[in-house]
Image (cartoon, rainbow, N blue to C red; front, side, top):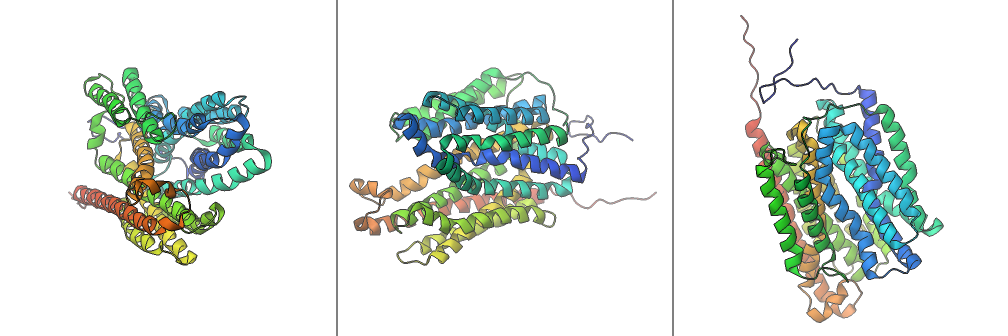
Length: 494
């Protein structure tokens, strides 16, 4: 028996998927490992007031408590993915779990807010090692016919993370204090680490090439500057100048791009974007996050500022959508056995694009809460179906030996899209208000309800355009996949 030839003309190393029973255990390990990483933001949102009171921290420290984690994680995702490609996915996954768990434990013991911020950065580095590796590991251990199902289960875990964070983070903070909101990550991390050490198989690494340290430094500095600028431009102590927010990171990222063209062993080869489906998959993922997360932010604000609901009631209205999103993500994975992932992604994006105008129309004075909950659910279900389909198509398209860095690129653009999902809709919403009344974005003001409602409709119009662009990108990806689909194989008997 001979080895199958590769596209490079060489031979492919045999990479047998794990046995079905063991492979699903690995999927469970990856879900448990990813759950606390993705639940971190809602947990910290709830714990932040208690942390600020405990340390008597100011606005600048409060901003860094929230932004340092996202800044470090976003800037390290591509680097972490490349290191996993080179040194092995199992090793890097377990190392990421150890770093994340230990940092969560030590962050909960922090004696000062500065040390807490430092351990949050270390925790984010461990989270980047886990996230950049998880989807690549799914492709390595699952047979092609089970890959979509595995991604669906994994996507359901990601959809569940905000619920878990809000529920257990709130209970832990209220019942035992903010330190336990961090310490509750430790049992999950230890479970995933021990179980993973037993069941996660070794995956042959890619070619052992030198790591482009200069390129990594430029990338981390550029992405870190961009995230810092976008997240704190209006915060006390923020950079304040658009030139600093955009200009400095743009120069650093341009220097990184130029180095990747001429470096002997680049961190990220630009030819990666020429692989079918990679560039379009990355673009669609970032547009979806921008449109969908922006819409959920607007709904949460509307229910509280115009609808007059307390935060708990607003959460109850959005709860059915979160539960339905978990179910839709998992079911979408099973549908990939009958429907091509690119088709599923296009259908999910189109569903979101149709749901957003309906959602905007329900945000009127006196609208029944069940009707708002229904349109929120439709929006979140469309997003979950898109995520499962787009991720499955992306993983299938990306080259196995570069899947870590490719997935890091996808997650990086998603994080940037998430930051823009705050700035873009709030900018559109604020543009409908006189400058003197823009404080009513976050406070109830009966006199400004008319202007606020018009502003919400304007913001939803912008986000609907974004989701339509997501749909167009998915359809272009589907058309590309259809053109490249091989014809039937004809066997000639002699």
